[in-house]
Picture 1 (tube, rainbow, N blue to C red):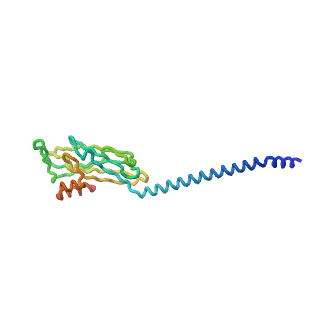
Picture 2: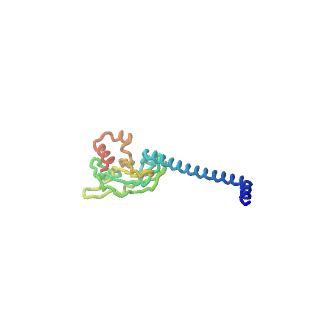
Amino acid sequence: MARIQVRKWLEENKIWFETVAAALISIMAIIVAFAQLSVMEKQSLIAERQFQSGIDPSISIELMDIGMGKNGIYNLKIKNNGALDICDVAIYENYLNCPFEQKGSHLAIDSKSFSISGISTLPMKQVPLLKPDDEVPYTIDIKKHIAETTEGTLYPCFLRLRVDYRKKVDGKPYQKLAAYGISNILFDLESEGSRAMLGNQPHIARVRELLLNNF
């Protein structure tokens, strides 16, 4: 009798069992779909990182106000003009000093007799992160680099700006070097304008070689 009652109850409630079973199957399918989506997202992220690890980042050092200085101060900007985030940006200044004499309101500088000043081992400025198209202002103040020596007064007549940075996606290190001549303007020694203005003077070629290599 009990078996008949149980069978009858099961037959009467069959639709509920089928509904619950279908709901459980649907829930399991949703769980599987979410798991597959999570795996696909991780695979996509890995693929994107692998793709980015093959791309070199790019930064530029740009003169502001066409390099015009005021009281020995020049304004530049460091810009991330690549497609990747860069981090641990560190900016170093190193100078070549030249003897000079004050003649009236002008400085008579002998740029052929340059010497290397103390090499900077600490960055002048650090930036934790630069996203694509981000830029940071950077100021050059040469007054503090004018030195009095036993041979006379030395003036910072050439500048090397070194920017060390890392690619955020994999931490790979990179470096950017720029060489400048210093007068009433800051001019890029690698620009076509400076080449036309300075020509192929042997000492300028030597200056470029020193500044654009790790002296």
